[in-house]
Figure 1 (cartoon, helix red, strand yellow):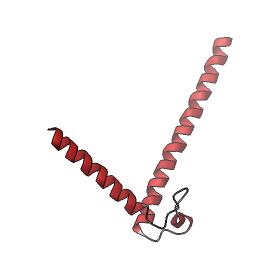
Figure 2: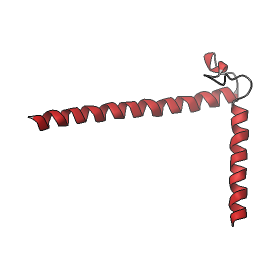
Figure 3: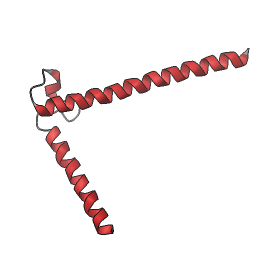
Figure 4: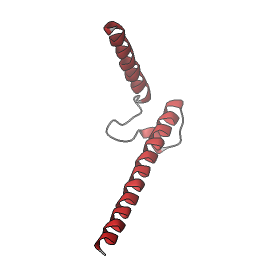
Length: 83
């Protein structure tokens, strides 16, 4: 059972590594955004990376909105408690 778990974990790690190398090819800038994102999407990898980046940005924006709404509710609560 341990051998099977080890093999499955190793296969998943290798797959993630290969997928990451495929997405981040030599057209990318490691420290920042990939160069292809600055222009039109030309290839499958660029479009896929742009889509995943857009989804991640959406999650970050949604989280910021939720935190702002929560902060607003807490301020309103404190105002009502102080009255």
